[in-house]
Amino acid sequence: MKFSNSYAQLGDAFFKRVKPSAASKPELLLWNSPLAKSLKISEALQNNPSLAAQIFSGSQLPEGADPMALAYSGHQFGHLNPQLGDGRAHLLGELINEDKVRMDIQLKGSGRTPYSRQGDGRCALGPAIREYIMSEAMYALRVPTSRALAVVATGDQVIRDSIKPGAVVTRVASSHIRVGTFQYFAIHKDLDSLQALVDYATNRHFPEIDPESQDKTLQFLQAAIDKQIQLVIEWMRVGFIHGVMNTDNVAISGETIDFGPCAMMGAYHPGTVFSSIDQQSRYAFGNQPSITLWNMTRLAESLLPLIHNDEKEAIALVEPLLTKFGPSFQQAYLTMLSRKLGFSQPSETHSALILALLETMQNKELDYTNTFMQLGMSLDNDTLRQSLTESLGSWYTDWKSALESSTENLDMAKALMNNNNPVLIPRNHHVEAVLKACEESGSAQAAEEFLSALRSPYETLESTKNYQDTPSDGDKFYRTFCGT
Ligand code: AMP
Ligand code: MG
Figure 1 (cartoon, rainbow, N blue to C red):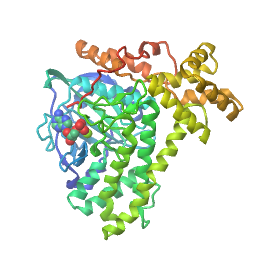
Figure 2 (cartoon, rainbow, N blue to C red; figure 1 turned 120 degrees about the horizontal axis):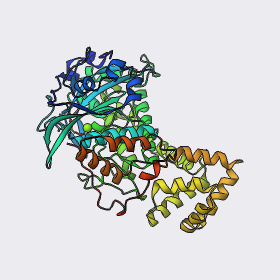
Figure 3 (cartoon, rainbow, N blue to C red; figure 1 turned 90 degrees about the vertical axis):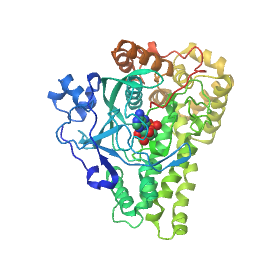
Figure 4 (cartoon, helix red, strand yellow; figure 1 turned 30 degrees about the vertical axis):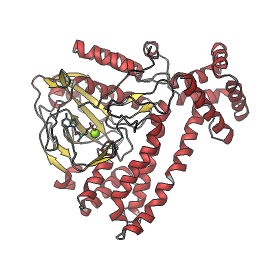
């Protein structure tokens, strides 16, 4: 592995150098070969599971790695926590992938750091495999996301509500710069570092912005907002609920990170929430757009001192960007839902159809994924057409005639729908069953089997049907937890 360490060059204010802890008996459980290849990881390492287990548990440092825990702050459930930082993660360094994109390689669950506070720096096996499954499922669904390279069982025990086996998950992301990283320097009034961070993040994520331009910080803010809109639109397309959209869990790259209490929505309801700690439903499915605006407002606040010396002037400059969020989001949301219904461009008629469908789905507790999937399939399947006409009433005929008048070719509408409506998502009850099987057996075979279906979420494979059923209790009692 040829590490480079550009983040390290930002200086000591940005991180603390700290070595991962060694694992007592590292064993490689999951290994992402296609991702390893794309990162140009050597054949020698790829073919040596025991060496991979040593490296990706943090027990042996690969050449060129410069392990560090990154500093950041964050608003957690609306409350500012100035001192967070990587309490159980080590950035090993960056690898330039085959597309020439700089990727962070980070171990999670690899021991205590100066930011651990009361935490043990560890990760249990279940949450590590969960992050691997969920992030790879999201990748296959074509949602911007961090990915997972490996899960290594450490052979050590971690204490949670009971004693659990420990593991380290290796996360690959286009950076780990969070909204909370900007907040950290703004709170500490370290404007030089804040400027350095904006310049670094602009160069890494938004190279189209001219570093010489007068309003480069505003352009950066706009680019970051646009990325978050695209991200949340994609979450909503597939029914993903992040569950803990604290500002420290919002990557400026616009990738999904931190898969702690995330879940998938089954029956459509905007109030759907599964996280046991989210008692106010702050991060419910339908709140994700407004929370994103809230988070982007926190980013904007952090950037104010770089935008203008006079705070009032600075606020006047950022306000239009935040005001535009609502209409931009709405437009993108309608476009996304239109495509799910087979319309390439949204129109007034489509908006009415979309709203009516969502209302029916909510009232009748219809499954979000299956309803859209069946609508697409019904275009050339009479049995499905009949059953949807029964469940959706006159809406179905209205939709079909709108579709016929908007396209010359229903095959194109069907292709658009198939491309936007997955046949398979990582349903909560299957994720939990797979994690249980892995924990009980100490092997990741159940996860591998699940992943082999999840890797083709828009195609019906032989194995797809094993994971498509909806939960018998409608997920009524399902709860997720922060994987701490
Ligand atoms: P999260 O809820 O995973 O986003 O974590 C919030 C903060 O708590 C971050 O600063 C984490 O690094 C830290 N944290 C979470 N779990 C642990 C742990 N087991 N040990 C130390 N720090 C942790
Ligand atoms: Mg986090």
